[in-house]
Image 1 (cartoon, rainbow, N blue to C red):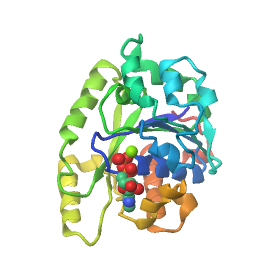
Image 2: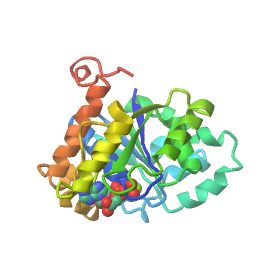
Image 3: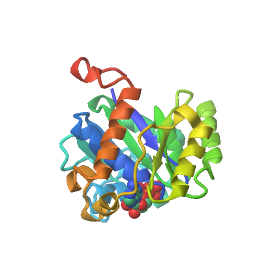
Length: 266
Ligand code: ADP
Ligand code: MG
């Protein structure tokens, strides 16, 4: 059964989508069957794995608002172990439409329950808001990964996010775990970047992943080719960072050993 991980941070531009698609692609090459759920109306994860959001015929919207069969929404990417449920600009309206729907916080959870057995990981790419779709993602998730950019004000807003997670834990999803904080967009040339790393590690200690994602031109340009970093340039620093990150997540979940034995650990 899949572990469901939401990639979240209400700040934009911190590397949520980059982490969702490249962690997903890395799990894929490590032979863990992975589904990305694009839960952001901007649909950057959808285009980042090669689909034009204006052309997709179904999107996550359809199972949040209507009872469309979730399996029919899944698209296969070029990576044989990586699939996606795309987003579409319609998702902007979904927040409003969902207000009157019963069980509105649990719509995504119910949908993903139908396909959980088909994957090792389901990664939800959240939008930079704490609206109803993000609440759905956090209610459906087993854990969250929080990308934090190595720049000024890195810690800003994290308190609010952790508070939101606490509220979700107490009201909607008591089992929600924090998988960890991943530092992103690290620039070796900036002394500030090291200060941010130290500050985040002092604050959050073992919650911070050892792997740090460096700022890497290839990572920045890959989405414009509709390619994950593995497809774009599997040997660049960005690809190596995300592969190491995937291995660290697997280790944290005690999954590396499991691959050769029984995959059904969760
Ligand atoms: P979010 O989803 O949090 O808004 P994105 O993942 O879309 O953030 O990243 C914001 C921008 O920064 C995008 O243009 C992305 O391509 C770029 N980017 C993200 N991570 C890196 C990185 N490690 N190196 C270079 N560019 C990056
Ligand atoms: Mg994004």
